[in-house]
Length: 115
Image (cartoon, rainbow, N blue to C red; front, side, top):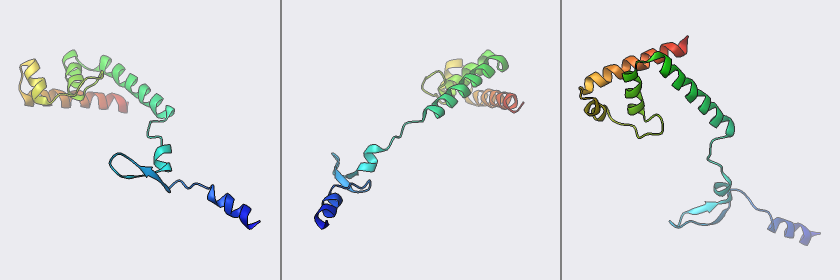
């Protein structure tokens, strides 16, 4: 009986027990391997619905220039976000004017989402 119990104990594995090392010589546990850092399907769907609603509000609420500036500034449509200076250079306007347009557009969208 004792041998059966000790054999059973030897085959148990714990999540926090080290199982090896990575290429940088850091200890790896089973828990780290089993962790899923990806978003859940519910979170992904929720994000898509919110994005769709944002784009719809942008189309109906903002002027074309305001919409384009927000797209450039925040990297919407899977683009790289640009600085206010970069956007100012594209439109040939000052950075402070880009800032004012951006603030006004965000305020308009915030008002739409509150209603």
